[in-house]
Length: 507
Image (cartoon, rainbow, N blue to C red; front, side, top):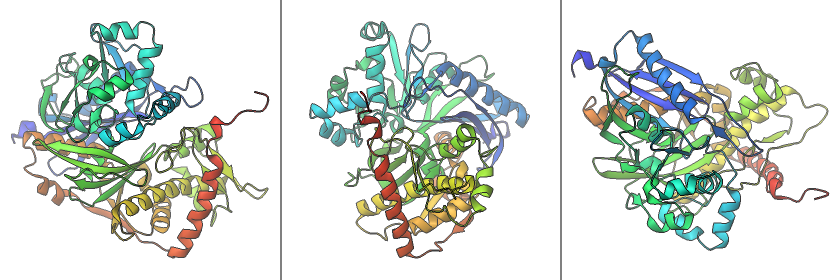
């Protein structure tokens, strides 16, 4: 690789911020920039983003990173893209303008659509073909809602004027000045519209959701040159050579390239994935089957469990309750007490994900007494992240047929830097927790996919050799103690179930 082409840039478009990270050949981040953007909550359980603000923030941090590194765009060998998945943008092909705010993956407004589809007996078809559940989490019912509720949308769609995309598609559309309308297989597998085994859009699923195929992007591989930048703000034609949804990118960045390897990402939510290789494993324990990536026309798959509110519960302590000034303060506050004083916080702010799948659950705090302090609440908030992730691991163990099937869990994401939380996770899950040297593996995975796509890295084996360990956490409590605490947690979860679907007094 020529010296003038010495970096890979990852565009990491997340739920609360847009980031750009520049990597060298050793997989080391050399410069980065990040900008938060507005979270929009029109009604309880609804979450939206301004897609134009997302693009502006992503474009800005890309150029900020170039300036910080003191290089030119011509020094960037390729761009990899990773993104918040399921979040749905529909825009006008002619004007390039979104017809509505993006509907975020956390949004629950389509719970009634999912209920109708289930009542029509369609759940088994969706599950068998997509590996997913009929849940508001996924893009398909969000598209259906937009076509039904935005004035003129259905007519424009029927005329071929509208384009749908998850955030990767939206970024690529803008990066290429509207030349490319594409998505990769990992993102497509999160829409409720793709047949998981064939990797193609499914006409029966589209018909069930009344979605015209003309609005869908082309499905491409996760690694390899699929487009080149054309936007005036990028002063070079840079290959776009890697695309993956954030959690699949993190799995790849964690070097979980072999069957049976697992990672958990601690971000706004928590997402646990287990590599199942070339086999689509159908979960018996309410997990999802998903595409991991496709490289050189060979698809690999994963089992996945999703926690909707992970690190977001710490943001709530900061922004909603004001008991901490910064997110990093939570560890010190939580560590100031020995335990949570039997206080349990179930952060079902937008429902419960796997393995419960209850869109009507809402946040609950149980066990409050006059002796409960802000420190106990902070500790309960951290424990809620570990409890929810332990539930996911238990479900994956059950699907694997052996409680000892997982020797270690690789962890990443911002909250993985919280040593107290990681020890809680080792205790409750009763497995070894391994944190890598580079904990922000989502962007790293996108960079690896892009680098592989242009030969910047020769092979997956070369990437495996780059991965290194920062810290290991071993369980400090017994299996019996962990079981007792999990049982208490499940009691608290039961109290949060179905709250938003219950009849209110006087109604």
